[in-house]
Length: 101
Image (cartoon, rainbow, N blue to C red; front, side, top):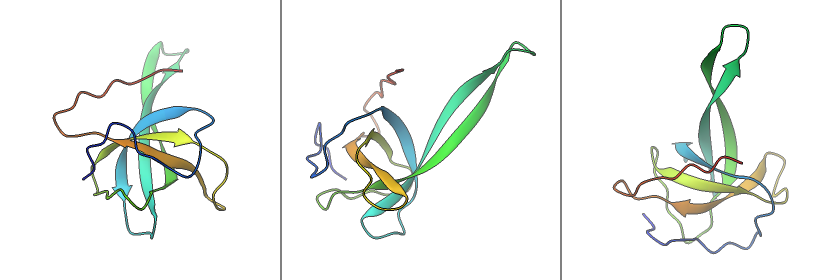
């Protein structure tokens, strides 16, 4: 697993970033990441948990396993389903700071 602070990529990040968990690494140069968030329901004055699954590009110098926590950034469309790239892989001990935008 890579322990670099920021991963160099050929695709510049030009949009939002988020932290998610790797669900699948079966594709070549790609991974599926689940991003979980809470959505407020005004009628009931409560929050419900929701999630989004996104296909991300994995640079060649990075190895991912299922369950890894990563930082993902939006970039130009790479393929039909990929428009995000892995920016950072967090260690198990490392505290993840979630940035709300």
